[in-house]
Image (cartoon, rainbow, N blue to C red; front, side, top):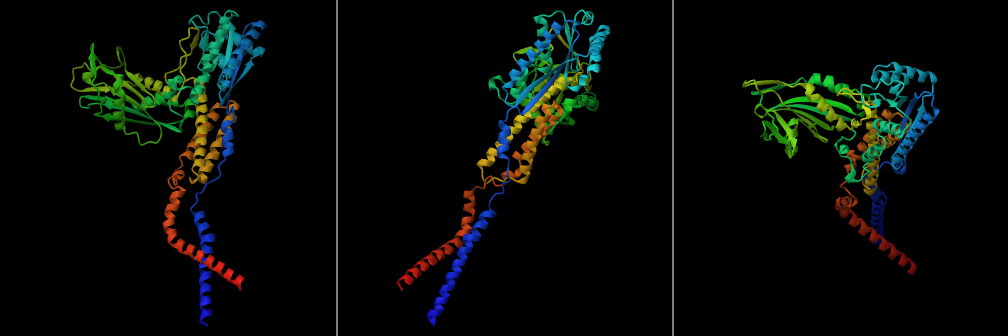
Length: 558
């Protein structure tokens, strides 16, 4: 009887240990492994790789309308058209090797006889070049984003260009009036040089290559390093430095200056599409550059070599660092009474001083000299913003990446625009470079993200990251489609949105949640918890296996 009870108890112990072991192996262990794994949403790895390797991601289309008022000389027409086509073919060839960009030119000859006659009569009766350009612009709709090249002989209106030396007039719209004397190499070279000035010509390759960082470091244009990268917004900070208000009280009318100078500049089509601007202004009292000017020939001079340190100290006191947006600082420094006039210089050439400083990625500084010879102990200085704002606008153009125009050509005259204005074809060239830059950053960011997630297997890939990656890819594809259709503004906006989504995915906080929690640390944390329970379960399973083996052997012997 006791043996039977003992056998029943042993059998129950065996079943209990076996059930615990089975439960631990087939339920607890998989459940623990499943609950501790990292969620990883599916990402389109192959699609992004194909998108990165695909050539001609962006196609830039430029259309040139050629209106030839060359009387009845068909051979001359054919010659000039052939020369223009050859120039454009060379330009396309230069850009063809670029991985991300294809340049496509479309040439249209304005062959409507009535239109040509009207243009001819308009140029004959025009009193000024600008008047003739306005007539051409209103007739050919120069606002459509295309460039109109009007070629006419010198005999058509020999007095039109008498007031200026050049034979080419380029308006602020996309109109170029070219006065030709004869069919010669000089004339064809003049036409190609005009296209170079307006559309960049072969220089487009360097602009795009610098945007994509494809060139050698030694040949990268310094101007590209000065510019801000494309972003959703830029904060513009205007600061007036007042060193000692008891002796020198400085004032400025910054509100009217912003409304009169800065807002018209920001309202331009290309600048408005580039980014959003947030403007702040302040007056800092008892703030100096903390430099010791050296007096030479009655003038106080400051070496530009000492200014970076002074600007760093000044930036810590301006208080605009709370914004997450890129910040550009524009500072007006009113020279102290006992140190005026004050000029900056690059050593050792101290004789050629200047009053403004441009700092890449930072902003600009203007030294405002005033009249301190009234003999009074207290001076009130009202800053003339007409002296300051043109300099700030010029510095802002450089920081945003607006290309500078070639104004040193003796053959080409570019219509002057206000200091706060920009030309339409200037913004086109800027948006092209910025669009390519956005595409480059987007593809680089997506590729880096995929490599990171592929190498670190336990890194979280949330649904938000998946959505941002898909959104970035969709916007990038749409940007290419719109750029192929010539819709440059919309293409740039989509490319910028694509870059922003890629950055949001790359810098998502959820990615770092388990970055420092790899599998070895997972085991290091859970083994101390599971080991006290796991060892008895494991020993019980070993004991059960031994008993089953012994029971099997005894059964065979019986």
